[in-house]
Length: 135
Image (cartoon, rainbow, N blue to C red):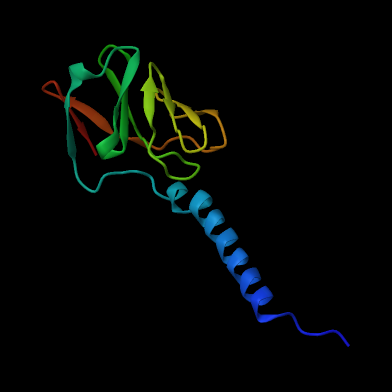
């Protein structure tokens, strides 16, 4: 007859299963379900702060606004659709997520490099008297 596993072996296995489950939840969880839409209108600041042909990251608001052509503004959630990290930087028309290396086109929201597979959700933005209003 074989002996039952030692208590230490059982506890170690349970801890590893729990840790593995945590990793899956942290990287695949609710960020994909969150559309990034603010609950109320948010004034981001001067429209002139967003360069034509570029973008500005509003990290504290978890938003990125681009101006692909003069007077045309696009806003997207800055939460990576892979794991929910906020984009770390924007260079010209690309937003980078430093958590796992995903990159996005901030004029369309489309994924340029994974592991993210879903685009950034678009959020309504308007220029009201030279000020950007989101939501």
